[in-house]
Length: 408
Image (cartoon, rainbow, N blue to C red; front, side):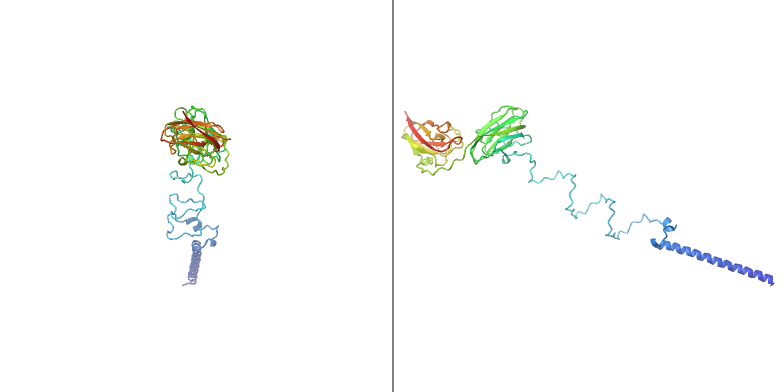
């Protein structure tokens, strides 16, 4: 081979060798780039240049269709997002008690089907709705803005003794007086508008007896009663409503006036009882005559007239003393009591001390004024004469003279 040919061949070999070297350098560069890409895929955030235009930042996104592993517990130390509302369809755990220190929502009404506490009054404004919670007016005075509207119909006078006659009535309201001493009251109801009131007073809540009762004056017209309340006891005033005309309930003004208070009498000095304490040991005055220096002071209060047939109407009285006549033939008697001082006597006669009926009874003449009765005693039938005392005025016990006359 000629020298030229060999030189050309050598030149070609050298060119080929340099070509191989260049290819080897290109492969190393590509491997370096691959290493960087791997580093970007597996490396931490700190190892990646934030400004680098990497495949992880632009081309890779989390798979939204893949649910988190249900067996992996969430970190208990990480608070849930407070801006995320819980699922409203998921009931809370029934075994977990609510926080007792958290007040319930004040704008949420309680369950209307749940009964309130039975010990709480349903309406504290309805004072006097029942006799047991009557409004106390013992001291008297004027009570404005009263009403029976909204109250119940829990009482009716029904025409009982001392009551007005009404078997049916409207709503009513109760008031009470409980004086320490015997006290006379005047009570007036002034109705408003067309209200037609009815007014009466009782000596006890469950009784059918009235101390006083009004007449029916009509719609819009005032009603007034006067009665005596015994010291140490209660008397109940009932403002009721008529059904015959006008409105059976409504607004009114109540006026309670104290007319007279009887002072408490001092306890009398012990008196030697010489008969007449009861009907069993009555003093016999069959033969008539005048008995001076008599007294009821020191005696007990065993009887009262009771307002029965033939008697004076007095359910309460003072101390009493008993006398008796028992003639063999029919005899007409006149008995007179002449009191001393301020003693206010009451006089009646009956054939049976256990009965409330009388063969005669006095009118109430007043303190220091004599009382007199006349009656006929049948043979063999004793008549008991009772000298009693009024409590409305004066002194309910004291000294007196007894005169028993046999009339021709």
